[in-house]
Amino acid sequence: MNARKKVEEIEKIFQRSNVEIADAEWIVCEITGYSKMCLSERQLTEAQIKKIDKVVKKRLKHIPIAQIFKKRNFYGLDLYINKNVLIPRFETEGLCELIAKELPADILGQLHGLDVGCGSGAICIVLSKLFGYKMTAVDISNKALKVAKKNAKKYNVDINYLRSNMLSEVKNYEFDFVVSNPPYILSSELKNLDKEVVGFEPKLALDGGGDGLQFYRKIIEDAPYVLKNDGYLFFEVGKGMANEVVRLMRKDFYAIKINKDLQGVDRYVFGKLKERKI
Ligand SMILES: C[S@@+](CC[C@H](N)C(=O)[O-])C[C@H]1O[C@@H](n2cnc3c(N)ncnc32)[C@H](O)[C@@H]1O
Image (tube, rainbow, N blue to C red; front, side, top):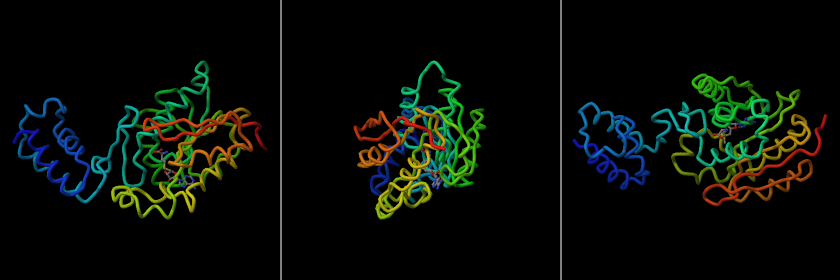
């Protein structure tokens, strides 16, 4: 069978089942190694068709495509992904870009950053591999840390990974910046998320408590003990949360700003520490 015809066939099946039809092309390309451009000219073997059909069946059960193929491209890096970590989102690439833009370029390589709730390691690995920062990363989940370590090994970056409940295990450090994309979904909203998310991604990576802000409060409260004077705190925030996060930061931080993501949503909040606490 022609590869393009197979994509169209899968798209029709996905359309009837309310599954993202853009995934059809991805599945065929991933399994065959063909590029999107040449699908119309290529024929599929029986073995390829069998493999494709197996993946389509999984996708129809709403298993996210990143979990089926156990990988996700993030900022140009192919990260290993499994059910124990959040699938890194495109918005989070913008957080990495923002940090590289805000921090002084002349001392790259000497700045030490902390990634709180590192999950797959997406943020800390990009910041280390592509922007040269020295990185420490913490997560409460040992299973997530295992994934993050595997990704760091793949990209040959030396990251100081620690199991820690928020900042509890890094109290003696002095960081130049702290970054976090913490869980920020309101507990009451979890059940309304897409089946792909609520059924397959870890609740630990999603649930931000009653008002979705519990981890922001904790990090804002504790960051002044681990940041240098004038050190930066960078957050990715949920839709509608930016102003409240700014309000929470005002006590100990200055030069606080909100930046938008590519969809025009207020997505990133960052500021500088007034004075380190001891
Ligand atoms: C939204 S995910 C972000 C993962 C990754 N940084 C990213 O952006 O793709 C939040 C992460 O915070 C971790 N987490 C949840 N509660 C935590 C806690 N009390 N202390 C440290 N990490 C926690 C979860 O295990 C999860 O990996």
